[in-house]
Length: 124
Image (cartoon, rainbow, N blue to C red):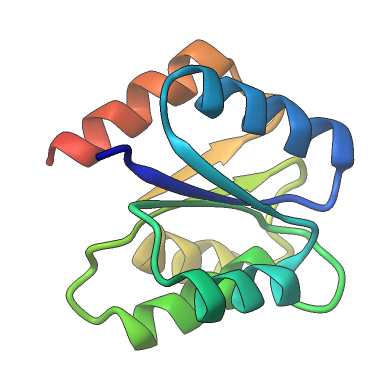
């Protein structure tokens, strides 16, 4: 059975590139255009194996999405990756992200490295 990935990214080009990357690697991929859309996907489709969220999205940030996932998945079965193109606004945001996300990545990221990191996360 294919591993499920949910990608929440407000930049359509990045979202499409990530979709293709993981689809080509055999993952079952769902995409969301923002944090609220990601929450809708989670309600309708259940938890993915991996959640990749952009930090800076309108309406609901990636960090807020991860917080909600952690509340609903206290065992931490969903592996979470927070991607950000900018520095976190405050050191409190950074500490919170480090405590919630399994991995934080700065954009632009190397797509080969990203897939390797996800493969490792899923093995652990």
